Amino acid sequence: MTLDEAPAGGSTEAFLAFAVELAQATGPIALPMYRTAMAVDNKQADGFDPVTQADRAAEEVMRTMIEERYPDHGILGEEFGEKAGNDDFTWILDPIDGTRSFISGTPTWMTLVGLKHDGRMIAGAAGQPFTDEIFAGSKAGAHLLHAGRKTELRCTSETDLSKVLAGTTAPYLYRKHGHEERLARIENAVQHLRFDADSYFHCMVAAGQLGISIDTGLQSYDIAALVPIVEGAGGIVTTWEGKDPGNGGDILVAANRALHEQAMALLA
Image 1 (cartoon, rainbow, N blue to C red):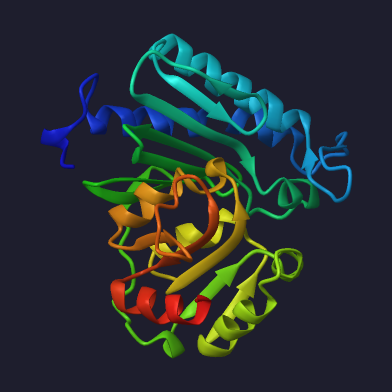
Image 2: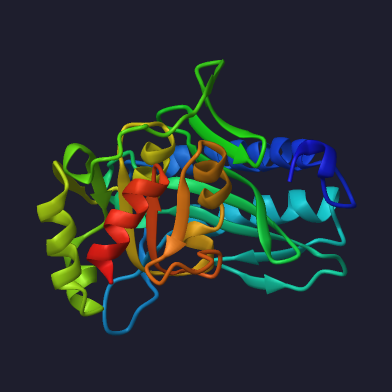
């Protein structure tokens, strides 16, 4: 889809600009709580799935903005669930992706904002307010907004998996889902595998720093916003079975087709 082929109800360019607005709006809410002694609740009885007031407040602000600008659009957010819309558009929100990073004081958490139209992700923004970065993308391309500058994002052209850097979350997630062998194959195949940066690693594929990134057990709101960013930078995002990643699952992000094929063979 080009901007000339934008969906009915608005241009993709306008939707992407609004996604960036939403990501920007969470900074003034989250940053005053970042690196402070805040209350942390655990959403998981048999594990640790933290949530803070920053998560909830940031999503509330984004929901209010969407309801004012596009009242007919649906909303799906991590903290407050789904609001059905009367249109073919759904905004998919993760107010603080990487809450463990947020409460640890490390700057790799992000606000994720994606827009789905007729089952397909068409625009996405991922913001990190502490580093003043917003990664944004659509079919027309992808860019980074940083310190008042706009820079085009482009994936690496390297096609040899053994020569690229890679990223993922934490090894315990692969143990939890029974994917330890797959993780080991990837780690042994790439030049170096980095851990524990959540969605920020996927943005680094779009920025040309990493060749691939992988994740396991994701929800829709963990990955949906990142698909247009990576694809806009020339990359590929699928599940490990080669299917649509928009609903989450086990995810592979690759800079190009050659790297995707090599990694898929290892994840099979």
